[in-house]
Amino acid sequence: MFCFIPLSSVHKQHIAVASLPQTGSVTMKLDITSRAADLRYAIRDIVVAAKKYEKEKRKTPLYLNIGDPLKYDWSTPDFMIEALHEASGKGRNGYAPSEGEDDLRHAAAEKEKRVNGIDIDPERVIVTAGVSEAIQFLTGSLISEGSEFLVPGPAYPPYISYIGYFGGNPITYRTIEEEGWIPDVDNLRGKINEKTKGILVINPNNPTGAVYDRKTLKQIADIAGEYELPLISDEIYDQLTFDVKQTPMASVVSDVPMVGFNGISKVYLAPGWRIGYVYFQDDGSELEPLRDAMVRQARIRICTNTPTQLAAAVALRSDGSHIEGMLERLRARRQVIWERLNNIEGISASLPQAAFYIMAKVDLNGIWKDDYEFVLDLLHETGVVFVPGSGFCADYGRDHFRSVFLPPVDMITEAMDRLENFMHKKQS
Image (tube, rainbow, N blue to C red):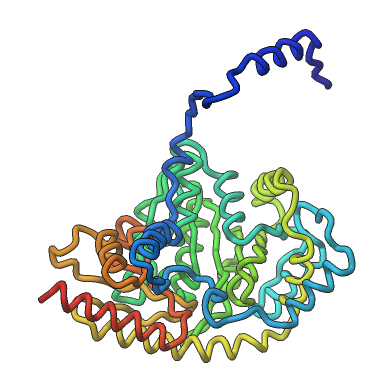
């Protein structure tokens, strides 16, 4: 159906525009929605304060806030760069299918089989602009005003933000710090009600670096099945584990439908490529309405970057030989930051078992009102940038801060020296 605008209306519009004053500004009313105006993302929000520090102090901060390896001394593997050049050079620069390039969807299925031992249907894979877009599609499909969604506390902030953005309430279930941040299954069960729309597991976990054991995963899956709730498992750090191996959720569920999130940003050192993927594990029917709803959102945004999809397929089919070197370097850096943090009075931290994050507890001791104030005070006086723990969960993240251990050892050491001197000064 076509919409025609009468010529007289067009003339009136032109006259109205012509009659506007040529100088000054036009006053307008902007009714910004609270869902947009109130959005928060602690990992990047702290950068605003860091940039202010840099401008006022004329010193470069020590950024330990963001999980981007390429900000430090890491680089994308050469074979992936070559694959990207080849894809673009061969003219593969047009639109891709909204669900993703077939080659990448099959590569994702092959990788999950080879690495995690699970069978997924490539036809039921959706390529997304990183896991962040997968979160948006998921919450846009399941969340309405007043909905509740269970997420681990603490959790990766976009889950909390997007649930709220669509009018829902993120309900965090406890993870037990004293036991390596493993989920408290009884606490999770007690928070389910008629408003609950799903259960999220982040394993390995950001921000804590925890790796959940098979027994815990099975208990969570059983609860999801008991209450007929969709189960979502974010596993983007699946190959970055240190002392224990990650157990894929799909390997412990039997008749419980689940949705898996993964991508190339972390393991394959290409966060800026923005390539993630979603897969659906069921008998082909239970999750189909959710898959369809997420694909419809994918069509609206048209597609993700075509050349990077093709290069990502090459990455997922690779032997992963670069990963061993990554883990060796990360282990050394993990050990340094963990030992240093636990040797500073008023600070303690569990040893992370995966990824490149460490969640440290700080004794505020009446000096700071909360972890936000602590992080900002530390930044102002030392230039060290951490993320306040409350940005990951107001309940289970408070009185904590998150650091990455991606930087070289000398940078980590410098940051720890500054933190130690800061704490000694404040406590004396």
